[in-house]
Length: 138
Image 1: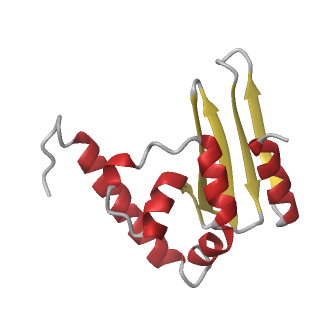
Image 2 (image 1 turned 180 degrees about the vertical axis):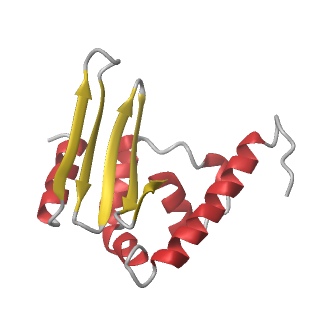
Image 3 (image 1 turned 30 degrees about the horizontal axis):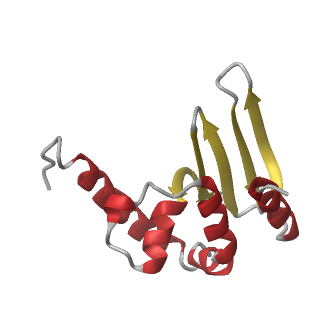
């Protein structure tokens, strides 16, 4: 069983439904699968050669967070330079290993605080990544 199949099975066991899938063989074999439990949403994406796993919340489905930034957040890791290096298999393992903690962080009670802190981390990461090429004003 592949890690992707294990993840699909994991979602099913945790009462997540496949709500969207798309496969485009003419577009480099790109695909995405979206799972939801009517509150949290997880999306697995293959875009050209990039594969990633990200999550959102039905309250605001346009704010996606990748597993790299979630890992930094959970581990209180400020080393944001290396936050885009998780493979899809590492992302899947990270999600499955930390699922309970992640779902608590995104509970309705913690939603605003968690998203705010993640947005701050993502902004720091963008500034760090582009700091060599651009001067970003505070």
